[in-house]
Length: 240
Ligand code: NDP
Image: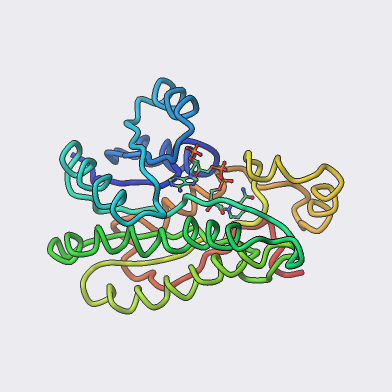
């Protein structure tokens, strides 16, 4: 039987592509989501992958959610921290709620989920963790102090936890996607998006599958020598 993998925010966008790649490679996959039950049900019907609703920004919900996944599928050996949101606004307009919501959903969630699976990964002497950061955590982005801070935090978190996991058979890596064609990016105004695309050397937005393929590389059983790394998948945008 394949290893058990959980993908947070697995029912839409990048997470969905990651779930499908994992399923196609023989993993037993659990897809987490926050509250869009219609999308989650559609995802389940179309993919056959079980869905688990819990809020990754809440530690207690993560504990209960992972316990349910472990009961139904087995102990989690692969964790992809993919769930994320944006609440953009310049400093002048950004509310404390928008700051806090983005930090907790994008960054505190990584602590919550890693903390909950860590002991079991240590006991098994095997684990693969991939945290989804962003090019905007590497370079910053106008109107996104909350998101850039959270994603930048993910990159530091990844390198620190990788050092703890390295001697124990657990790798911890990050992926920093550029702009990918999902609901999150479709919400960006058309003119702004055109400007962004003009700065991407390959001349297009990324596809969710472009990111999923990177995840599959990092979680492979044979990728034990790759840890604490950040894989930039952005059509070359990081060079500009
Ligand atoms: P989408 O908005 O398309 O999907 C987000 C997913 O995350 C949904 O399944 C959603 O569940 C889930 N989610 C949101 N909040 C929570 C929560 N509190 N608890 C559990 N699940 C939650 O996002 P993308 O696919 O575009 O993005 C995926 C990741 O990639 C994010 O971390 C994002 O920051 C990052 N990223 C995306 C880029 C892009 O261009 N799209 C670029 C760089 C990074 P529900 O459906 O229930 O709301």
